[in-house]
Amino acid sequence: MAQTWAYFDTSTYLKNFVKESGSAQARKFTAKHRILSSALLSVECFSALKRKRLAGELKSRELDTLTKKIRTSLTHIEIIRLTDEVIARAELIVASSPVRSLDALHIASALIFQQAVQISLLFVTSDIRQLEAAHAHGFATVFVE
Image 1: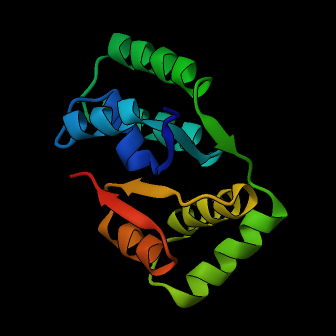
Image 2: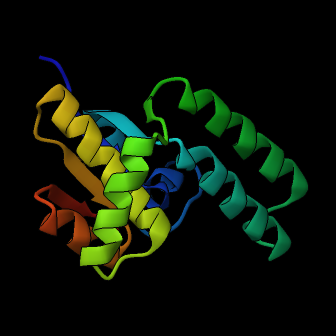
């Protein structure tokens, strides 16, 4: 049986690599689904890792190792480019939802993919505001702590 698609926000995707609350649940969803995300994913992951390094939560060697693991993992997921269509949809989302700009770009990316492929997409996130906005835009949603 083919795996179903799930859109992962960066907050949840990163839990596959950094042990924190919700990591086991994130890994479980990753194993059960075909993963897709926005082109923002890599930049947001590397930014979050750098912040953890600067805060002393990661050693330099750990940062390098995690960066390599994430780069490799990105070759196994579907990445949605930031097109004019995605940006226009995100503008509509921020006009109608109390959601941050990058969160709106994630939701817009998922909407564009869902419409293009004509499937029901599961939206997985660790951000409550983003979860609520994704749900308001018709997604089945999962919150990963």
